[in-house]
Length: 421
Image (tube, rainbow, N blue to C red; front, top):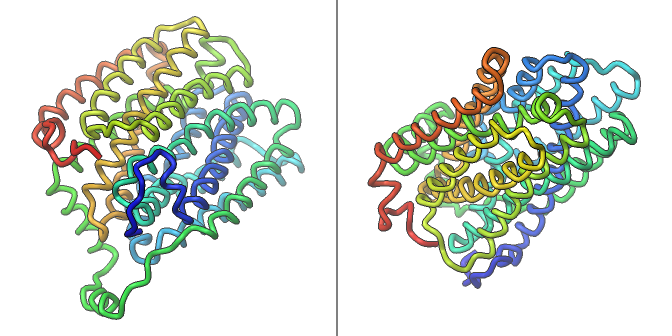
């Protein structure tokens, strides 16, 4: 940890823990994305209801409400322990869906119930990943490591979308879920190589015992800590904004776009998801290998604005190939926005608050189910294009408010959030 590390794109892989964590996260992300596409299409085709589709999408992020509690638990018992538990839960739930499918007992209601259980844990997965990276990777390599880490979710949307769609078409849900459960088992096995917290000295343990407070007070302290730091507040606001107004159109609503706008099937849906994720993967790679240090806060603001402009264009595109291109560029913009955002928050949080701050960052994900639940009725009444237009323009207006409100902390080149690193 204390040894000098060369500033290269692959430098984080010199750290043993990262060499285990990255493939573990990658495989888990593949399985998660396969599940989302498979079950979303299942709910839509079995019920024909866009409202139930957006409800399914919202349930994936139910746990964002309790993510700060996971952050407190991670700071107390270790994020690696929580990582083990989450991967074990995913395995059990995937196995249950496999068994129900093979026995002919799978129904949309059961899918929604199981999705709500997984959704209690899923949003905190990113908390654990980022906290473990910040715990094990030197600060000079943090941006690169976060970029590499983000390739796990971006590339997973490509592999998961294509593999999920193709496997269900060829094998059915039962055998596809046998593959999903196997992926979770491999992910769990790899996570055993992830490093825990560095051992504390007797003096540190005694100091912790003397200052120990209740988990509730831990959480309150973290809220106060964030409230006093404008850069953290601005990053949190932006995270909520893109989740509420941009992500609904590239995650939960893509099955609707595929079926009702482009008139394509499940495999076509896989290509739409993959195009967005390919852009995200390329964006993550660019942030990893680029040799010119970026100004994190400015980068996240400009890229998010571009993302909303692309959403406006996507809302009116009816040609599938133009849609694929727009989704690709949107994925590129969102990756170049959210990786610096994570860096701003991790740099702004002290070691003792890292898990709780990232847990509170997950509260922003609640904007996604909220945005989905509002978009469903709007699409039914005014159409997809007008709904997308309203969301995109609202996003740009609120971004302008954010920059003006926290200008001194987010935009000046000499602000701590813009230090080149």
